[in-house]
Amino acid sequence: MSEHEADVVVVGGGGSGLAAAIEAATLGRSVILVEKNPALGGTTARSVGSITASNTPHQTAAGVKDSPQDHFNDMPLFAAKWMPRSDNEALRRLLTENVPETVRWLMSMGVVFFGPLPEPPHRRPRMHSVLPTSRAYIYFLGRRARELGVDIRLATRARRFVVDNGAVKGVVCEGSSGTELTLFARGGVVLASGDYSANPELKAKYISPRIASVAPVNPTSTGDGHLMALELGSRVLNGDVFPFYIRFSSPSTKKLAQLLPPWRVITKSMKWALDNLPSGMLRPFVMDFLTTVLAPSPKLFTAGAILVNLKGERFTDETKDASDALVDQPEHAGFIVFDQQIAKRFSAWPYYISTAPSFGYAYCQDYKRSRKDIYHEAATVSALADKLKVPASALENTIKQRPNGESTWRAPFHALGPVKILLTLADGGLDVTDRLEVRGKNGEPILGLFAAGSVGQGGLLLEGHGHHIGWAFTSGRLAGRYAAHRVVSPSAS
Ligand SMILES: Cc1cc2nc3c(=O)[nH]c(=O)nc-3n(C[C@H](O)[C@H](O)[C@H](O)COP(=O)(O)OP(=O)(O)OC[C@H]3O[C@@H](n4cnc5c(N)ncnc54)[C@H](O)[C@@H]3O)c2cc1C
Image (cartoon, helix red, strand yellow):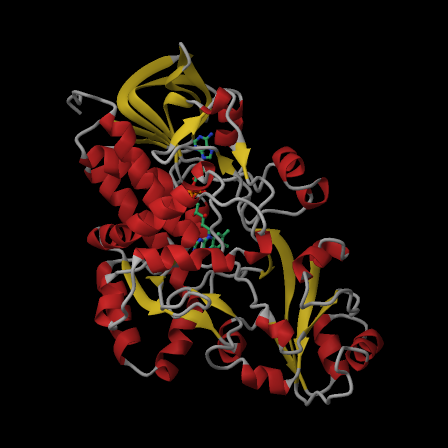
């Protein structure tokens, strides 16, 4: 067993952990960051990568007048699905007031954004799309952390805390070969270990046994930090909140965007082109970036598209809770079926098929061109059924009997899928103070323990695009700063 000491120890090398490490190191503190996977990234690197903020240089350039207060007021408009329940207003304030600076901080490291893009019910365009994909965050933050001398230990998994007199003094970790390593933290430990969408027991406990069977997007989001803190008497807030969407699978072959390095010369040229060239010219190129598991917009269903299972049968009112109903269908999978009129409508704002890296939104023609593996079109319903490998008679029957079946669908017929139900995240976070200290028994802060990102979400509702990433980086920076400030005289690094 070996032992090491640093001012700040960070558990997790996704967005929040890298932000915490960089902030503490910028303040002159020595930092060790442990990441259980062989590479940095976490869910952050699998995300679409949008970040939502007011008062950004992009808003200023576009003449958008906005404020953190307006952003604060608009956020609950997205969380209607989860109401009535308590939100964490103090953390919402922390996010909306600090995320403008976070965007500039990310830009200062080389991250390039396109935007601001509209996303009602936000009253102003606030969404910013990272170029070319969310891997850029990890590339630039990983580079900055190394430049600042952060000691990054990959394939090293935190297992339990070192506790002395109720205060956290460090973390016991396990290396890939099973060797034990104790990391002592003079200032504090920042938990930045992501969420528990891949932990069946925690999902069953906080969400429901039925949802526990749904596969996560990130199979390594096992809630380790939650479990470690629960052992110290901490509690999970809003544990049953989970963004739960039908999702398109990611492409089976690597796309250009996954091969392209996120170098500034490339992303700056992309931004220039996005700002200056007609979108028709660029979309074929940029939409090659539909690389992650994207979620179809519910507007498709309100416009009349239907969701059928692998037997070609409709099984729910899609406008209510299609995601939930898909849980009980074979392989948790289905197809979204629609006609030419709907296809035509979903070819321009505000009728988008999904959000998308770079441009922010993707339309029918983008999917048709860039996701041939999941876009199907045929002159007749029976020919479409053949392409989907579902029984033709069942699909014909389903289409005849759909709501508003009397209104005619026009050929050609279209389908997107298979779509699957995947758990994007589990939103339950540890109870934290507004200085991101983890609360333990009796609600008292546990000395020396901070949390950020999903594990430090503290009951904050982050519905809407771009709030989770905003929270990961913002809370990471702040938690790293507060942990660093607990070291009165920084040690020489
Ligand atoms: C498909 C998809 C698209 C999304 N798109 C968006 C979007 O466009 N905008 C948005 O705002 N949000 C989006 N999100 C959500 C967003 O990506 C996450 O909320 C955010 O990245 C979480 O950051 P994090 O740092 O808390 O966790 P992570 O990025 O998951 O980082 C946690 C890290 O901790 C490591 N770890 C865990 N346990 C241990 C341990 N015991 N020891 C050491 N290391 C450990 C993990 O391996 C991981 O690397 C999306 C999510 C998904 C799945």
